[in-house]
Length: 436
Image 1 (cartoon, helix red, strand yellow):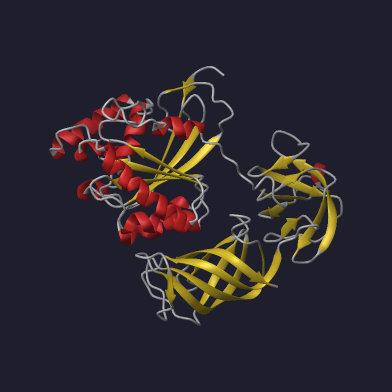
Image 2 (tube, helix red, strand yellow):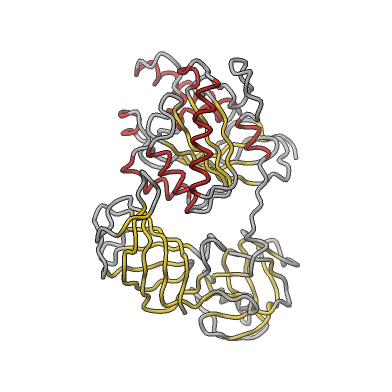
């Protein structure tokens, strides 16, 4: 493929992108640890910044009196963010290297914006947690690492930033790395990488630092380029939430009936046996259609239209699945909940629940325990959940949902809760177990 400009940012040459694929990553950590600066450095050093963008950043930096080109302004896009010098909303940026494409979410560091971090991290393959070398592991480090673990993010990189402010001390870096190893063991994080960096000047971000010759590991961008994405969703049981029923009105297609959606798990092919849930009807896949023509097989995360061999009743919100390994048709859930509303909630609250493409009503039966962010242990329920609480709860459903444990599927194991009166999203949930 010939070099061209990035279709998302419009900047920089894009070389032939190999089989590295798309890597979704989220940056998080405590406030002022340098998340936005790191992202700005990645964008700048990989030549993703247009000349007029850079000129605007230079002018803004000079007007603010920063004394340097403040690359954090590339991601702090809201006026309030620039005025306060903090990140409030999740900012998404795309950049590419010769090996792969990246979609990066910059999550806020303040405690009151933890809910935004959950949003940014919900689809991530990798989390970059920033740690200030002067402060080491703090509460937000534990909180964001815990959320990364709860959300099942398979790879975690801790970038120990501002190493220049501790005189590039090898001893200080190893002290923080030991604390992080202990934290990863406590949280069950299986793949942890710790890298010393100076985001402001680019040390160990895109180029190796001559000021830290004692560090022999990979620099950040090399690691992001080479990390293997072992996504087990394609290897798991077949799952296909129906998002739309396609019935063309044209006379020449009057007998066409297809079911559109994004594959949530497994590999699909014509001839596969299918169970339609919650009805329990069975049939087989007749064809897999796309705009580019039929496919011999499809897998997560492709969006396709499935045609079935039999003309049976299938509606939006139904789930097509492998009859040999069906999900649980659940009326009760035990789940981990991240409470995102400023309004507290007590047991007995009535909420709406959205799972894949299906809606139902739910009652918060019990708040079993809340995670203590200091110790990361569960403590008995205080009787209500407040903003940013992470808790283990039990929910009772008005009608069945078709779920898997979140540990087995990040799609059919996830849901959101909304306030029925305001339609505001109030919580994100991950299924621990389900009762039919």
